[in-house]
Length: 110
View 1 (cartoon, rainbow, N blue to C red):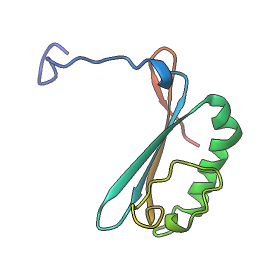
View 2 (cartoon, rainbow, N blue to C red):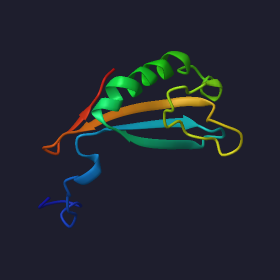
View 3 (cartoon, rainbow, N blue to C red):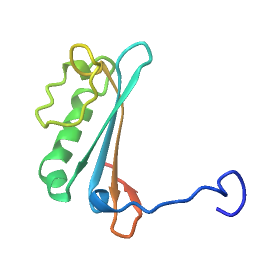
View 4 (tube, rainbow, N blue to C red):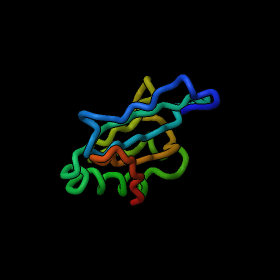
């Protein structure tokens, strides 16, 4: 970062609890263009045995507008709340990343 606007910034390699885990980030629309994000870390074992199936279920059952608020979430995924009476009404995005031991971040396509 020797030139440009980032020259006085420092990149810090992630360490600790995120290394070797999957980071699941779900964004929902709570109405009136209010977007809410919820993120959770999963171990490889939990991802393989439980969360991956849940993410596929979420994609299948709540990918259309206004379906997220009716999703039963039997897999206990980190689904954003609308702060009133339940989940956000519409699923905006789901991102799954894996932070490897060497510091590289991988996006999981499922």
